[in-house]
Image (cartoon, rainbow, N blue to C red):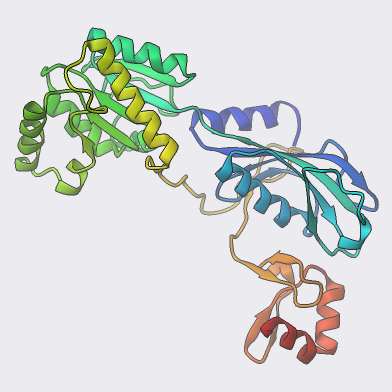
Length: 340
């Protein structure tokens, strides 16, 4: 997968706010099915676009890519048989043992690409403008919307064509701050609660916030959703100016993001593989279930592609036909080793 199709897929994921990793083959030792410069895009749920190697290398690269997305750290991995490299391993490189009949080896650079934080501010007060400016200074994606713009039929630049109910999923990774200064607070919070954002805050006094949430509870808005509203929004700094209030709200958002408290909604998972453009490599969702090849110890995907073999009611999976054949010839010794 190269050229415009590759770049379009990256842009598509970025617009949707989905994290992914780029995997690039920077070195290969033949025989190997991959080529130097081969690339793939891997999402956090194991969806893979492109080509970085065959059945031996692919699961290992996907696992490393998913970990890179979690910790946000790029990594360089070396895939091959453990005895291929000896002690000549550069510092900082991770060796991932794989056992393939081809006896090839790959060096793959994996770089996580994480979504830019998305902040939606509803209201046009001086505080709202100050908060928008501060968030942009951090490199965040910011939308400053009026009450008319925040709702069904409005336009968003963050992976959705509108903010209606059918597109609420676009805001499940977003932070929403309602700063309407008493002009439609109830309506805006009710709309925002239905969207299920990662963070929802109301800029208001404590007494006003309690009144807004109490009114919505009487209207039948589920209490568990209202309990997630930060009201008042921001860290409690006492009496503050509108500039300091913006700082307090941004500080709370930074604090919650750094602690991992702003959980993102899981990305949607396609029902089946969808073909990419001709010649671009096919897109597929890899199964997350894994197993260990009892012969060579390699971790493989536990599905039909791993040539399953049942022994004493237990299914075993293999990286290649050679390992499966060795197991068939002496299943007792290998199965005992696995159980130990």
